Length: 167
Image 1 (tube, rainbow, N blue to C red):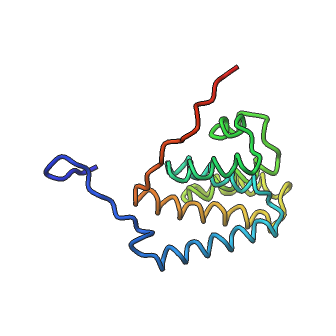
Image 2 (image 1 turned 180 degrees about the vertical axis):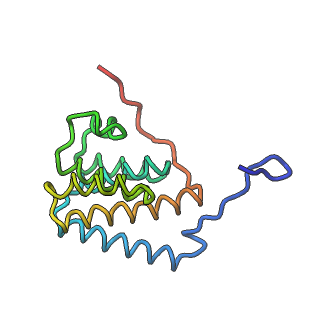
């Protein structure tokens, strides 16, 4: 990252605030994608798993924070969130969730056509075409929000909750 002459990092523009009309259009798109996912029968936790996994791959701290909290509110377990980055190596996700996650990863790296073919292979026996389409759209939408937050360097506020303890 380049620095200014005084040694500080360059100040980022919050592009969502700088260009509110464009950001509002992205929000409207996201609302349509959410409705599409619900109509297709993708449950809220699956949508949030997609949001989190794509945000992990893109390295978006702001979206990871936001969607982890949303997933927990939707009933997702801390254990499943904790192992999401290694979802292929666990038995805690349903076949439908695994298919949606494979599609999300393939969507996030559009240059890997083998991963896309593999994701479709996994998804077709488990998800409807509407669900496949919706999962891909969810990944596309969160990817766009990831880029807004990454390029704006949206801050992640510190949690006010006490840290969890292990038993």
